[in-house]
Amino acid sequence: MYTYSFEKLEVWQLSRQLVRKIYDTTSSFPKDEQFGLTNQLRRASVSVSSNIAEGSGRISNKDKARFIEIAFSSLLEVINQLILANDLSFVDEHELSVFREEINELSNKLNAFHKKLLSN
Image 1 (cartoon, rainbow, N blue to C red):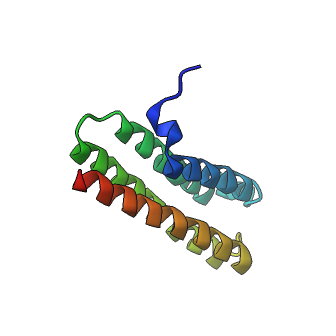
Image 2: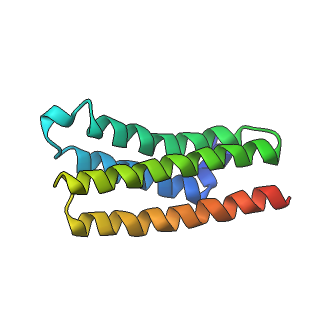
């Protein structure tokens, strides 16, 4: 089976893990949040991995870097929404802290990847 270049990227693999955790976490959110915060969190997390994948298909490093910027922005959206979920008692402090650590690692790797793309 053919493997696409983005599938080999550590940032993409980490973003997939984040999506799985977001889906697991939001499955316990109140049902009346199904079209609110649940949907927003899921879409934002999927956007991170999708933009990494989409950017890998671009020819120039400048274009690839732009999609990494968009992925980073979506990642900030995820952390914002998790903070709101904590404010609303959908996510406890410990869970938020674990997410913060994982998001921090992913954001650092996205930034490093972005710099690498622009330096080549």
